[in-house]
Amino acid sequence: DIVVTQSPDSLAVSLGERATINCKSSQSVLYSSINKNYFAWYQQKPGQPPRLLFYWASTRESGVPDRFSASGSETDFTLTISSLQAEDVAVYYCQQYYTNPQTFGQGTKLEIK
Amino acid sequence: QLQLQESGPGLVKPSETLSLTCTVSGGSISSSGYFWGWIRQPPGKGLEWIGSISSTGSTYYNPSLKSRLTISGDTSMNLFSLRLSSVTAADTAVYYCARQAGTGSDVWGQGTLVTVSS
Image (cartoon, rainbow over the protein chains, first blue to last red):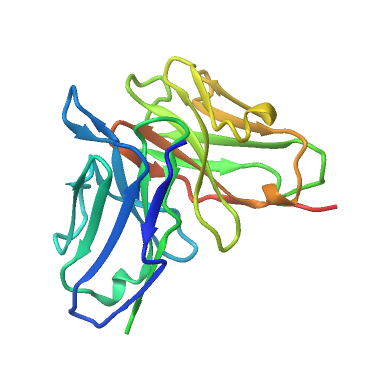
């Protein structure tokens, strides 16, 4: 199985400040033939299902605010919130869907400092 | 607008079989290029991919659950189902169904809590 390691486990950031979450995959998730990384980011608020934020490592899903950005390739990926808003408090997960079993990072709990 | 809704018993006894259904509306499970999957989340913990079924009926299982797992689809009813046998307390979780594709899991059901307890 591909192991996805997410860091940090928790993060407290002041409103308006930048938040950065990292994920590392134990092997490359890049489909070279189409130059796409099969890697996604999700946001989960209490009592809700996860919400897809980004796919192909950096393609923003429709409706996701542009203060959210994502980058990375092959094994190293980053999610950034440029200016934290109160509604961004949530747990964030990364996921590789390059191969089955699809695997998730352990999650990062983002809070307001 | 595509919607998914999980249904099934909220309480299952140890050693019995957990059965859930995901009813799809606003789209067809036969739509080419999509997979229909199950993901679970134990209380207070992270997400685990259980498995999926393709639009053509091929199934893909997490090896950690494969010996106990069956995922099936019913195109006439536009739903897909999960059966997990010989459950234990470790199978207690919120179970989600989701549409999956090469662009991630973009539509999720609200989830249903299944507790394994006598």
